[in-house]
Image 1 (tube, rainbow, N blue to C red):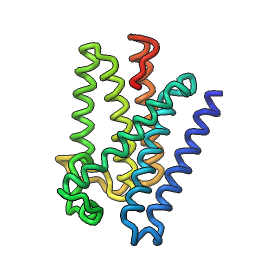
Image 2: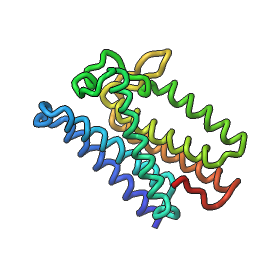
Image 3: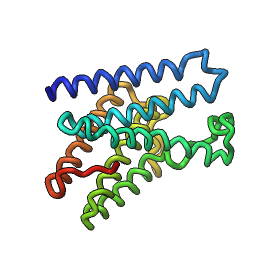
Length: 197
């Protein structure tokens, strides 16, 4: 059963990612920036959701669905920084920024999340640890998908070249594996039924 669960999540991830990229790249959406941005954002959210489902594993699946939805929403929320950086709610301004907005700096955002995660771990705040673990999955899956077009922004070193699709899927696998280990170790040391929602 676990093999089928993980095989299903892998297939679903590939299908969602491929279809999402096809929809976003379709020439018909070129004139409809809001629709294109919405399709891209929904794809980010679905990938974050699937990654959290996979990290929680088949034993926790029905119970982890609400957390997975929250992870997907966090992955979607990252794109709000486009509007903040543009200082405008116009989609034209948000999609024509000269530089990437602040929440898309992989090194800084992950460092901040890891610092909060470490503090939560050291102080025994399991729910905060769990939430930051979820945020790290949402952020890294979002950044990794964006890196297919623009590379990863690793301040102070700059940006990498756009990553290959194989690296993207391997990266998602690593995200899921690390998050799964983080979930398991936190559950072994603390309460067996931790839920954020």
